[in-house]
Image (cartoon, rainbow, N blue to C red; front, top):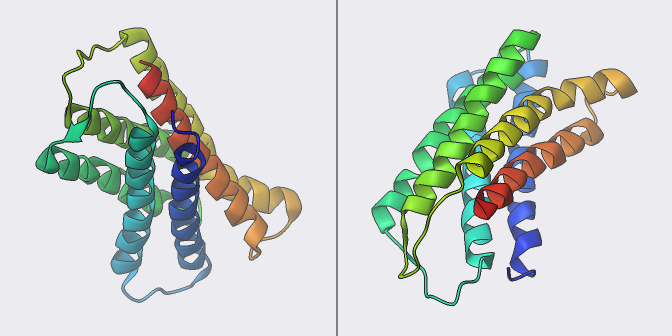
Length: 193
């Protein structure tokens, strides 16, 4: 790995998550949000593009002895599942009340979206190197992102309740670090696969 690009990739997922959590927090605090759907899609684009950018900066950090190119259309298509999963996550984290079942189902679907984005992005790689996947590590990468995404989706509210701060930057920042870490963890475990 090019270790200059690895922290940059993590930073991209944290920034995308921060913007999304900030939007979700404002939607949740507001009594009536005009154009709620537009704001949810804006947050979904921030979160999805942050995860997608993290993935491709992380891919560029990966160094092989063979050159790597990417199929433009497959690479672009890999953005679709993560944005759709992010839209679902935005609906969950911007709601005033969330149950454990809602958070768990959101974590599963968001984690699946991240996983699909990663493996579709990998399918877009063009290289002379022979690629194969170790299925047990692929499954571990998906399990890790589902668990961490579920925790990260509820982190902001848990932190807000723990410190009694419903409007400050700290709960959003810590939630963004957790979400960005979940996305990056999945990526680098999946690269090991």
